[in-house]
Image (tube, rainbow, N blue to C red; front, side, top):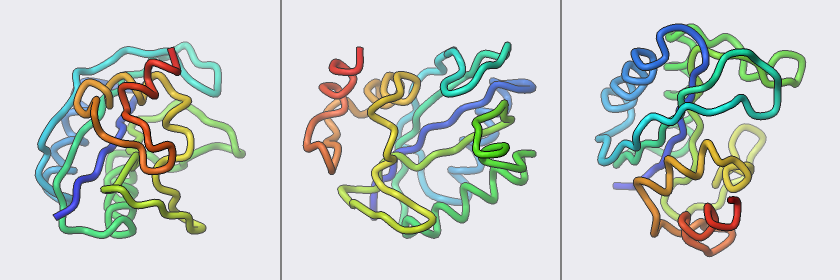
Length: 154
């Protein structure tokens, strides 16, 4: 079994209900949810919107491969109403966003998936929830704890 960390976010609709629904889908299709952070209300990152985000992180134990997980998360996003990852290459409002942050200590770079997530260490809305549930987890590229990376980001 492998351990995978996800970042979840939404800034449209019934945010709390959407987040809970996404976590239930992850539990049903990907693996056991071992830990979940609190929900964090955050400002949009990388684009302007009047809608604040709700963000969370989850830790999951799974038997699926990273590419299988990517397929499942994209399917969950589509079923929950998400049509595009970006609009014209720009971030935009979204009903749900599920990002794979880390999968064990794997470092992967393909046309469709990069692990660990290449921007996670630059995003407070990712690192705060992740540090809540996995402060001592080691980033496989930087060889530093999540807690330490969060400290540097702040």
